Image (cartoon, rainbow, N blue to C red; front, side, top):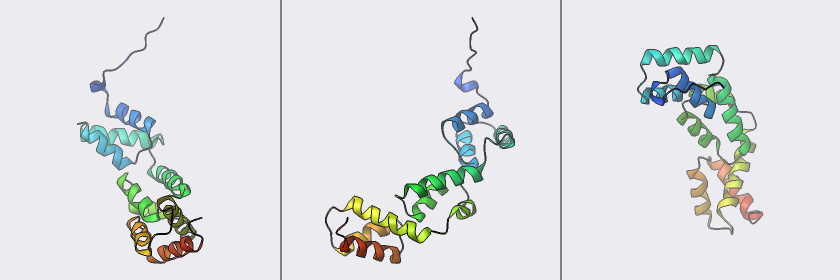
Length: 157
């Protein structure tokens, strides 16, 4: 009977820890580097581990950003600004995020704004409250005006 060799958590190399983190969730290179640095791995060991992961295509910011953008965008609950902020917070570069933005942004924004109003309000409140709610979520004025008007005309349906 063979015994599986286990490694103590504090003796894991940066590569092993990075692999563990990637196995649990897609990570950007920047986020992974931040997490490994927080765990007190040496900078050269971290760089070596990240290079090895990139060589084997386990770490690819462009593909990971595209997948995460697509998932958040298709979900339709967030404005483009919220998606952008969320991906920036996950360590993706702004230029990389900009590449993911499709051409149907206006349609998406309108649908997401209307969905946000329907989720928040059961009855039609005063316009000011709806404007505040959508503005806080990053929608632009034109999109808010459309969603508020549509919501009022259809009584939130």
